[in-house]
Image 1: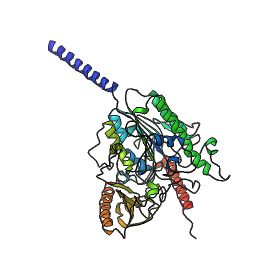
Image 2: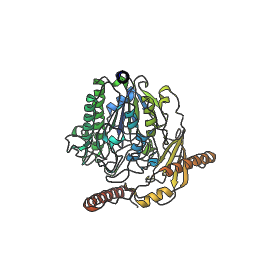
Image 3: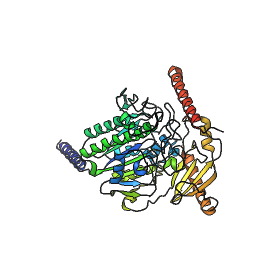
Image 4: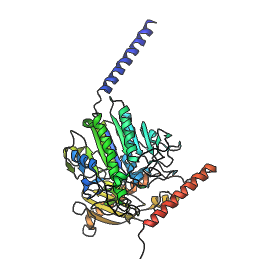
Length: 503
């Protein structure tokens, strides 16, 4: 009896001691907070600090002056869902099975078996929050697909894709699984408001990871009159709406940065600002800018994948610093895990690399080159790889896929069977605009890089899962299928209108 009592006392003592140690660790957790801000369809040339002559982006310009401006920053893909997938998983999005933007009700999604940076940071003791555009599943807020909470976010205030019907008074936000109905205001401000509320209510003793995904300047664009009024243009021009949308986002980011200062979080916060792909430049809003780069969103040439990138991390970045070291969205997971002391999963291929060397002026040592693979790319080239200053582009064999978000079975067969065909070669250090194809002048380099690209391409293609055809049945299924077909048809009509007319 006495031995049993002593054992109970010993167990209780150890339990109290361990709890005390955990409490001390929690109270003294000085790991940096992490804020990642992602714009939507913001081009390389769409900010004042990247050379735009008209767009007013005073907050982001000041952020660049306070930290490090990246001039070779890349999105993980040439459009939204794949880019966000690479950013969250550290893996090339085609390896994960995300081949294009994800329409509502699509079977395509980031599977439960994937491990996101949010999950890794949460498990390492970080508080986690997502606000804004999600776009990593088709069956958003439905039990059939994992939601932000299943991928590591303890609090989420999200939309499946765009703010609808426009950025003004959106009605499709969901907070922690509960639709919130029509909101008053503009999307950027609403996203910033939610982030600030969450920051105010968090546990101040623990570090946090805040992932802020603005919808701006993705269509359907809607900007407040005060921001449109900043830009003079002909009466029928949509330029004030587009440019004003960037300024509107800039102002919302300014409120978030002010909150970080007000809560005395600036000095211990790593903040990263970037975009998910190049500028859309649509028929309705042909105003985005890729600066000196070739092409736009949807291309694997530089204009589709090279994006703004700004990092402010007091004590690690210097004010006004400029870095031309190539970095990419897939680098986020290994970098943040290194910062937070979180373990990177060893049971899967992680394609990104920690970029921490850039904070001490060193080069990043990559085992896997930067790589992009987009079967639905608008231009003839569908695959690209950058190694140092050299970039190789490749076309694919097989049918040209229709530019729609709907992943058809025939598309999946084409994706699984396509091989590399013809190549182009560019030296980006001397030719940022990709004007001079050096394939004929550099045959040995071309052959070496083509073989490296082929090996990487086949590895990624092999890993990619197949998705089932959408086969909803019954009354609800008919409604969903009708909606799905309507969305697909509308997208195809938009694409047809934007194609150059034959003369």
